[in-house]
Length: 97
Image (tube, rainbow, N blue to C red; front, side, top):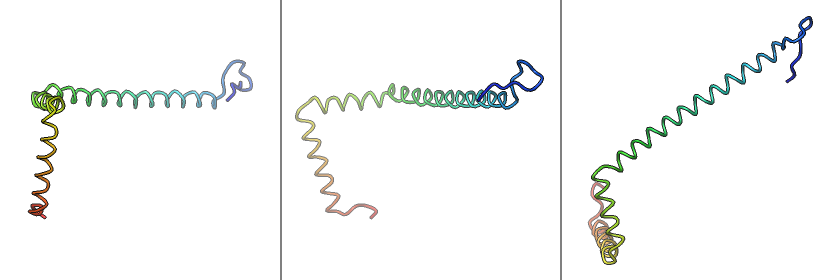
């Protein structure tokens, strides 16, 4: 892209040059708008996650999860219980199948 002067005008840029500048400005504005929209969507999702993390259910589940990992007997006991339930379901046949 060159800044060509039209015949008869000393400092006037060509129409093609002006059109190119206008297109680049429009593209930059479009990109900025898309980025702003993405940032707003991300902020909304972040707010939703923050609300969920502040809920009593999440705090209780988090405390139980911590207890399961910290108490050495609970994790193997939970694993055996889960295996027993799965074996029982396999013997009975899955409900609704």
